[in-house]
Length: 154
Image (cartoon, rainbow, N blue to C red; front, side):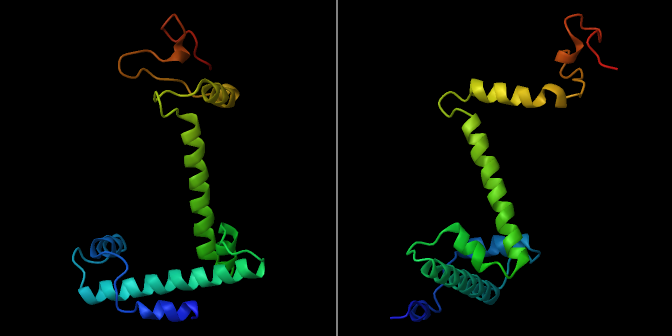
């Protein structure tokens, strides 16, 4: 059976919960309690969009001789719409930032790894020309041991 025919078999079933759809609609400017018809239409639109995107990505993977879809296949499927492609790239950049931050933080003891701290200090060596201010009643590191602005750069 063709995969698209199998998708038609589930028509009329809601794939997302009412709460998910309500939050999505409210976040995009709808009233706090949307109509049930609005939620059903949105669910159908989102499901159709995801299905078509996956079929297009599968077609790209098939042409490359693969059975599994890779992220590049989804990028290729969105190549004609720069807004979708830009959003995908933005999300990938955020994922890279999150992954690199997770590598810095040691989940066992919630302290920064020594190598990560050293790497961050090296990056800030010359780039950090900000003056630490008096925060919480304690003098910042830029004031030096004298505590009276002896270490200030002018």
